[in-house]
Image (cartoon, rainbow, N blue to C red; front, side):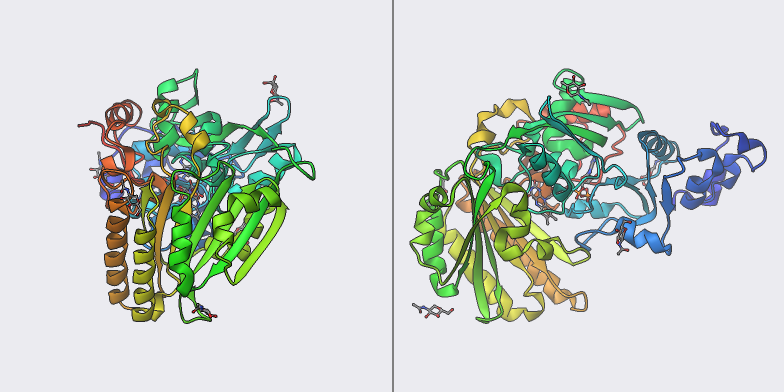
Length: 509
Ligand SMILES: Cc1cc2nc3c(=O)[nH]c(=O)nc-3n(C[C@H](O)[C@H](O)[C@H](O)COP(=O)(O)OP(=O)(O)OC[C@H]3O[C@@H](n4cnc5c(N)ncnc54)[C@H](O)[C@@H]3O)c2cc1C
Ligand SMILES: *[C@@H]1O[C@H](CO)[C@@H](O)[C@H](O)[C@H]1NC(C)=O
Ligand SMILES: *[C@@H]1O[C@H](CO)[C@@H](O)[C@H](O)[C@H]1NC(C)=O
Ligand SMILES: *[C@@H]1O[C@H](CO)[C@@H](O)[C@H](O)[C@H]1NC(C)=O
Ligand SMILES: *[C@@H]1O[C@H](CO)[C@@H](O)[C@H](O)[C@H]1NC(C)=O
Ligand SMILES: *[C@@H]1O[C@H](CO)[C@@H](O)[C@H](O)[C@H]1NC(C)=O
């Protein structure tokens, strides 16, 4: 290991010990035998609320817990800084001793490149959980570790709404830095389109303000490739006034539907009829899953409409016309949608510590035949692999009117014209043998190839936060964006400290 005694003890320059204790405890460098000793050295004088944890500690598993345990990052230590100063100190310590680290918000990142971090340091941002709405400015400022579910009530109570992701559990800032795709990209845009400014700790341990007017190049880059550039301690977003309507506005029609296998072709035909004409207020997530009652694949569909039930029913008429056997329609306030959508499926999608191996492709064209073929392949997979019946296809079809009203050049995110994020999620029991993961890998890649063919894109395009990790950087970041991204990577993170999430090169081409 790089921090082996011999190597570290060879460091000769004295550490900048600021505390008074340096006289009575051994000098810092005498103690640095391993990562643990480096972090616990008294001279660090962490804030009293900053916590450290190590493998074997009761709190370690909790602090480092992740949504998926497939190819996860592995840590030798975790620090949960209580202050921005302690984030800075940690980053400087990491730079000085060449410690590999990952800053984590809510632990929902799932690309396999995160797993390239081994024996590293987790800089856990969960203490950065503040949320404050500025009523007169119409903004909200959140800490770097805040989750989707933490933001919605405060925002709604203050008379506002904001674009979010589709589940309650991911980090709000973590989702933002990829783009933040979600149901309301037709009327509100992507989450990056709400971003006003962030405070960011750079690779060399400086705190910078990043906005349209302060470090604008970096502001461009963090909106689409943010995991490559720094640690965001807080972020400010522009809010939207609650969308007008009955009951004080902000009402969302939620339609949950079960579609049996014998109706899947009709369903996908109806879904295809929305290709290129998804109404701005409408959003659909179609989950292909194993239906235990039927003993076969089935579809659990969630359609949401920002507005009244009457308008919502009109907007999704082609689906309702199919007369699916189970249709449950309700109208709920915007901030209750996470808890309602998909027959209340959110806790299942949000469960931590599960093996989940994901592939994905963006589409700007919906093809019923591609979706039906994928449905059939999942049916075969479920019968061949009963141990992996927790696997699902999550076909997210969202409108893009507001997302595409922002010029493509304004942000690093390259796929504003996408009309769907197709996600292929494979999950299996930890006790199964490697044949399951081999089959999942094969099918994941195959489905991705299949969707690319009718996607309307010339090549695979994938949302960075949904990338498996085996894609080419062009397929993630877009060929047009890479020269500028690489130049910015070179100036802000030349040593590639932020290397574990689909890392950018420092030179392109
Ligand atoms: C169940 C589920 C639902 C999802 N739904 C959506 C969705 O609807 N829309 C969408 O866009 N994405 C969605 N995602 C993807 C999610 O946004 C990304 O995985 C995101 O990176 C998760 O952030 P996190 O803080 O939870 O994860 P972590 O694993 O903690 O972090 C993931 C990456 O983000 C970086 N990061 C996190 N916080 C910060 C910060 N404050 N400063 C700098 N870097 C940071 C980390 O360094 C790491 O590279 C979903 C993921 C899951 C598992
Ligand atoms: C992890 O810590 C959080 C915050 O202290 C706590 O709410 C939660 O219950 C803990 N979880 C486990 C599994 O210990
Ligand atoms: C820093 O660590 C990485 C691996 O974690 C290693 O590849 C690299 O050579 C190290 N650099 C120095 C200067 O020790
Ligand atoms: C809220 O925003 C206004 C307008 O931008 C600003 O003047 C004020 O200082 C902010 N209030 C707080 C508490 O930050
Ligand atoms: C479709 O399948 C469901 C059960 O999943 C069954 O009740 C229904 O009768 C079938 N319909 C047709 C037309 O076969
Ligand atoms: C879009 O999907 C339709 C329906 O399957 C298909 O006919 C068409 O070829 C696709 N378009 C592109 C550009 O792939």
